[in-house]
Amino acid sequence: MKKRDKIIYWVATLWLALGMTATGIVQMLKIKEQEGMIQHLGFPVYFLTLIGIWKLLGTAAILIPKFPLLKEWAYAGFFFTMTGAVFSHLVVGDHPKELFGPVLLIVLTIVSWYFRPLERKAILAN
Image 1 (cartoon, rainbow, N blue to C red):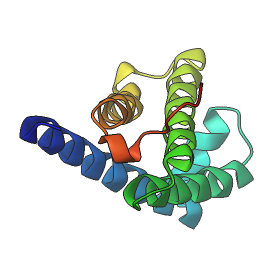
Image 2: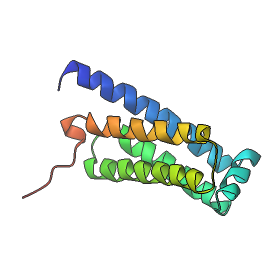
Image 3: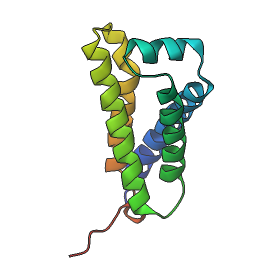
Image 4: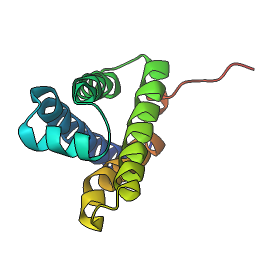
């Protein structure tokens, strides 16, 4: 792996981990603004706890060594969660500024997944 690719991977992965950890903690704490937003999007408040836990577990999965299949699931979960957030904001007619966070996390997820080192990739058997 080229040094440039390692740098891109680790920068994207650390920013992704920071973003998912920060939002996961805020969601688990059920801050009033988060409760209002999740209800505005049409989801029950308990959904915050579920997504928050998934984000923290997914962050751990992409950061720890080994377990490449688990990493694939974590990346997929991040991608589906954030695309779901974008879609939800669009459906309820939110201002485009509400899309910035989820879109940024989608981009970081894709960049981190694409540039991950070979030992962090799931190898498909023939």
